[in-house]
Every structure is written in C-alpha cells, then in structure tokens.
Amino acid sequence: MELARTKAELQARLGPARARGAHIALAPTMGALHDGHGALIEAAARSADLVVVSDFVNPSQFAAGEDFERYPRDLQRDADFAARAGADLLFAPSVAELYGTVTEPLSATSIDVGELGRIWEGALRPTHFAGVALVVVKLLGLTRPHSAYFGEKDYQQLCVIRQLVRDLDIATRIVAVETVREADGLALSSRNRYLDAGQRQQAAGIFAALQAARHGARAGQRDARALEQVAREALADFEIGYVALVDPDSLRSLDALTAPARLLVSVTLGGVHLIDNSAIAPPGADDGP
Ligand code: PAF
Image (tube, rainbow, N blue to C red; front, side, top):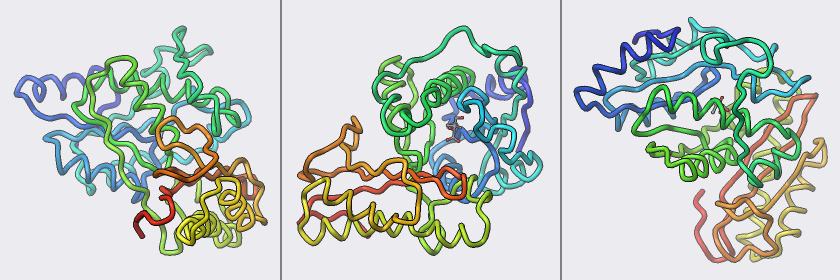
C-alpha cells in the first residue's frame, strides 16, 4: 500500500489507474481505524481495482468545543490497518494541503444540505453536515471514484451524502455498509475509546434500546411515539439527544410504523456523544436479526 500526503501524490497514483480504466473506490475516514472502517475497505476491495482510503480529521465538521483536538490520530497504525484490510492507497493530507489554508474560513464556498442537515444530529450540531458535505465533495472531486463507501452507523450522514451526489450530479455510486458491532451490540466508533470501563459497559444499553423498540414492533406496536417511548425507557440512564422513528430516506418523523423505517438514537454518556440506529419493520414484516 502506498501513502499520499499531497494532492499531487494522489493524482500521480490515480492518473495511470484511471487511464487504464481501473475501477476506483474511495472509503473516506477520519482515521483511528477500527473494524467498522475495515468493513468499508473490504467491501470496496471486493468490487474495485484500486481502493483509496482517505484519513483526514476534518476541522470543518467540528464546532468550537467539540473533540477536534482530542480526536485520536495515529497515521502509522492506520496505514498498517488499511493495508491489511485491502487498501491500495492511503490519502492523508494535512489541513493546509487539503484546504489550502489553516485559518478560518477554511473555504469561501460552503454547502447547505437543506432540511436533512438541520434535523436530528443537525439540530444538535448545526454546522456539522455542511462540514461533512464540504470535505466529501472535495474528496470525491480529488479522487473521482466510481464508488464510495459509507457506514450505516452514521445513518443521517449517509442520507446527506446520497442527497448530495444526486443534487450535484456527482458520478459516484454511494455504497452503504452495515454497522459493525461489538459482541454486546455497541456500534464500533472511534469515540468509544473516550469511554471509561463503566461507561463502556453502560453503552451497550444503546443497542438494547434499539432492540427493545424493534421487539415492540414485532409484538404489534405501530404507534411511533409508543415505540420511541420503549427506547427512551431503556435509555433512562443516558442523557438523550433524540430518539426518533423516521422515514428511511427523508428522515422525517413518522406517526406510525406502516412501512420499513429507521429508528435513530443519540445520547451523551460521560460527555461523550454517541449515535446509533436500526432498521425497523412494521408488525408482520421481517426486519432481520
Ligand atoms: O464518517 C466520517 O468518518 C466522516 O464524517 C467523513 C465521511 C470521513 C468526512 O470527514
């Protein structure tokens, strides 16, 4: 696997691959790679000739007071991990290299992703999705991949990116990869490492809450508020950001579970912001394990 620290190095490696018609895939990450990222890279490697992993802690998606400085960074470990998972190229630019500056505003151009960026996570983090959209457009523009891989763990981000490529006619296929979980159900996240042992144990309750609501649906409950309440009760020990039963594409709140939907959960535990979600099917329909 090769390492590109600059846009020029990235282009030098991609140019010949593009010229010979190689299928290029991109797995965008902020580093601190774990098996969730591994699943993105492995899925990309199964269908592409050249797998690019970007490794960039993007300042524009963090607000003041969030964990940008604290976010874990270990390029050597990430390089070893990405290589093992099947990456061909790790693109790890500095902020100055990617944005051309280190002073605010990092970019004169900003991207408003509309209502999808203002609800749920966007209501708690009002500048977040504009920052994600900006860096993803830059990474897609630099890499021009045939396909790009994103985890379902950040479900709202996935929906924002699908909308972005549709609205801006970006010719990249967006591929969603299922959330990878620990044995007790906790979704893998780079932020899990901020949790102490007690909090880590408690964090398994997030998945239990999602499962409790799904069981409620299987048992015949269709009322959205009642299903959200089941999850809220299971999250009694957490500071809840939101629990929302939503349409799986628009993420608009639903009144009743009459078609396949998504249940979104956001909590804070010991100051650590954690999100998770699950598909949830109406009573009588199969929604998987
Ligand atoms: O999901 C992430 O790790 C980031 O939000 C992304 C998509 C790499 C953009 O910085």
